Image (cartoon, rainbow, N blue to C red):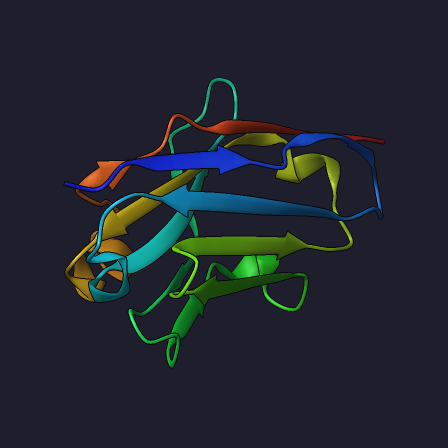
Length: 124
């Protein structure tokens, strides 16, 4: 069982930056692939970024490549998403997710465990 709690969301102007953090419970955090997803009002949830259990592999959706960076600290049971050059289209609720299987996150775009989400609003 893994419990995930996101933080760091807020309101920012276009071009600004935010850093999202996800704190995970459990002693086996380092075994899990971690991902960030987002859902805007009236839209389906979409994959944003993922990082493998060791941090050696990362994956991003095309629209955030070069602007967002996912990282993890297995000693602190945390995963972060640094978001730069934010655009109004990035406005959404952002969810942290965890799954033991890398392909579940980066191919099937889902996960076994989810956080409650944190709101990111980018004003134009």
